[in-house]
Length: 364
Image 1: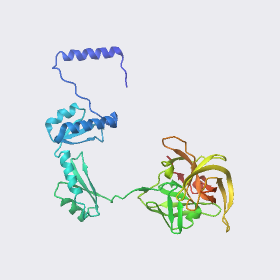
Image 2: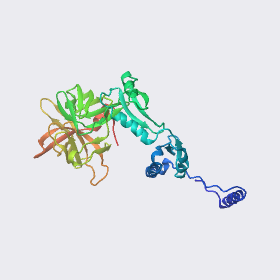
Image 3: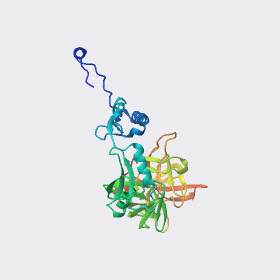
Image 4: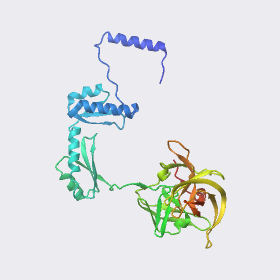
């Protein structure tokens, strides 16, 4: 804010007083409420105007260019009331009640709804109900226009679909077995799920808890124990999260700083869920038998069982409430023992696969 000298302000005030001596007094215009005032202030004004306008209320919205609060009304005489409340009035044809009635009519006609009808909604600024039809399909257009209520049809390129997330520690299903998700990563425009190499060596199409993810992209086992699944389905998101199951809300990946010997780590997998322990050794060579020797693994006393393979190893989250940020460590490789009596578990450090395949870890 520019601050003017006190002397200048005095001159301006004096000039204003001189003008009022010759002009008729007018009431000061109410300032316009803007989104900069914050969601709570805007919501309170919207609710108050919606109540006071009653059946003349035609909806409210924020102007996408200025951010000013706009309020529709079917009664032009209520415009001054809207201005006094800090909003900009707009006289419209349909009240909010009318638009809701039109939408309800469509809601009650879903029997035999064509798949090309992507949905319908009230477009408040344009003051009409819009029906979205994929590609101008004749069946969808016929459904929209036969409702007996005024609607506007918009053409969309594709139908909506449910979105689901691939989260560390959750299930990863191959044609020959089940493993767990390690971490999510990306390379340019492509996204990948990182897991254990003895899982990806099964190859083929891979599914998650919500459906198909994609196909195995790369795999390295033995010697190493890592692999990637390329995400090919558009309904799959890859957030930087790991499931703690019954132990709490998901933790979020902040980076990949290595926890040294004696440090606390936790792991997640579909069989035994969330378990914690300490790092016992780094860069260990492990003999899994049948010539399957893997180098460079980290040894821990956090238990695991079959099916947990590939699942996330992370730094132990802090105690207390709030968002838990952790450091990605690696993917469960193998071990001995179980989660009833305890055991030893090894993980493949995640940094190696990131460097090998030139991937960037998904981070919070």
